[in-house]
Length: 73
Image 1 (tube, rainbow, N blue to C red):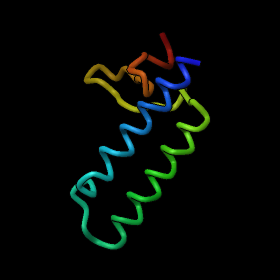
Image 2 (image 1 turned 135 degrees about the vertical axis):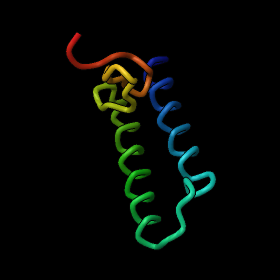
Image 3 (image 1 turned 30 degrees about the vertical axis):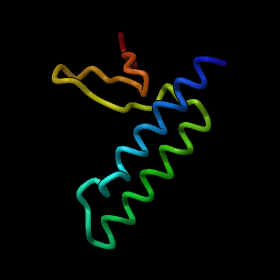
Image 4 (image 1 turned 30 degrees about the horizontal axis):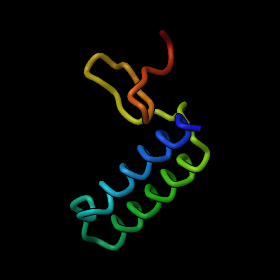
């Protein structure tokens, strides 16, 4: 249960960060895209998804919402 709470918390943090300052976006189309991305993250959070890539480092390593390396080891 604690792991699920941590995952959901990380997704909520990401959603908040995007929406806080509209992520620097101001056109109608870009704001629609931002809403779509926030909804996608909410869906992933509800599913406690840890397989979706959230970041990539300079070496091409892919990480999930928890900062854990995913993909080919």
